[in-house]
Image (cartoon, rainbow, N blue to C red; front, side, top):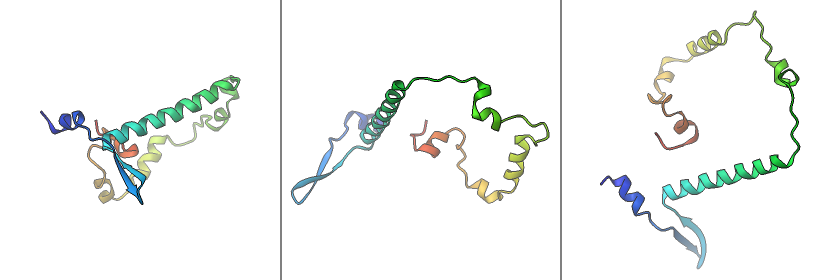
Length: 117
């Protein structure tokens, strides 16, 4: 049996830290902490969605959207891939070499700290 599956089955109970005889902190198994943090995030999202449900909805056409004016196509502008290639060329090779080799596969891990898949 792998150590990971053993740990999952034998999760340690939270430990309460006392200061001057009073509870001051709790030590949790890291996986338990991550689960609680995810639940808290989900609860915040639900609260936001509930608040949105109380407001009357107003629908606009795409032409009415402020973004429609900001993103109008200009055939005289350089394509974005050219702009990005130019910017990338300015980054020194040693900086590119510092990037993790699995960056594109594990983007959520490196951006948000999610466990690697």
